[in-house]
Image 1 (cartoon, rainbow, N blue to C red):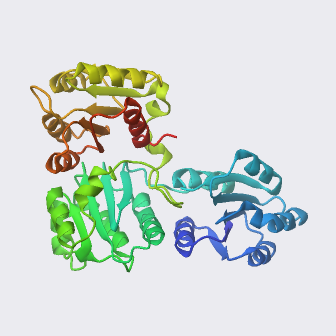
Image 2 (image 1 turned 180 degrees about the horizontal axis):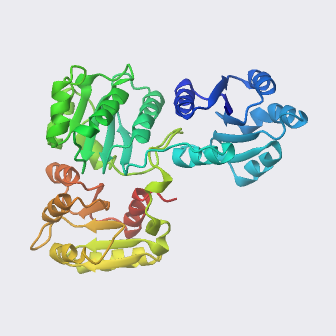
Image 3 (image 1 turned 180 degrees about the vertical axis):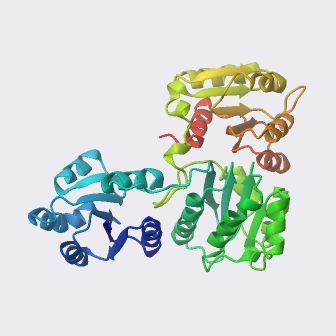
Length: 409
């Protein structure tokens, strides 16, 4: 049986990795501190060493030197995770057997792929298509799930939520779980139970302060009929959640929405894990030169401005003056992102969003509209829009928002 030595890292981080590797019939040993790590390395001679760097790589200089000078340990491969560092620093680690360095936040599909290659042992990853985004605003944490329920990403939620609560020192949080384009059946019940168990596993989170935004009857029935979940608030209306949070004197949800907290952007603290996997990115959206953008707006000036801005990054841009024209084009076009106005003649932006939702359309949509009314913003996001930007903005702002949503640097 192959063995892995894990050095440092938070208890929850090490627990997650150990649980995953143990399930794959690997022996996992943990060590806290360089001295303990060296002792366990020379006594156990593991097949792989995982090191989680909290601060500086240089903190492990003595450990690396000792490993290098021991002929029995010199060839043991190391995978490191830690803060972002320049390539020159990681290149210097090759002589000590460091074959991979993953900067936080870690994409675990790539992480486990590297572990598999080194150990020459396949580590299974749930392939279920699933978008899982986690954001916070004040004492509110928003979890958005769409497409499906992926067990890997559900497990990672525990760590992601803990990261946010610890970083913001939140002791009494509000949790909003948003189910978008998910139509589970009875066979998904176990994954839904895993989801709710994961969210409620942190002592700081109470079921009565948790909100499930869904119109799916199966999800509603599961919550109502489960003794541990039936205190979770459930609604199909985002405004109901907004009112409930506002009534408690907490940060109001509508303010959070106006700040676009549901956008897939980088968090503002040193988060350790990423609930997005590298495989989530469509191959056609790896850079601006292959990004396909639909701009749906009846204002020809707006269309021209956005066309010029996206063309500057070599994106492929298709312009639509009406919502119907855009919908008619979907049989022949696959877009990576859609910029959509709300107030248009004929089909409004709401009409378009409703039809796209009924179609199960999963391409991210940015609403770009003059309206600042709370109800319009909330309705847009309830219908599946990923972000709401108020006109006018510099065209570059729209481009950056699109790039952020597609999770590119």
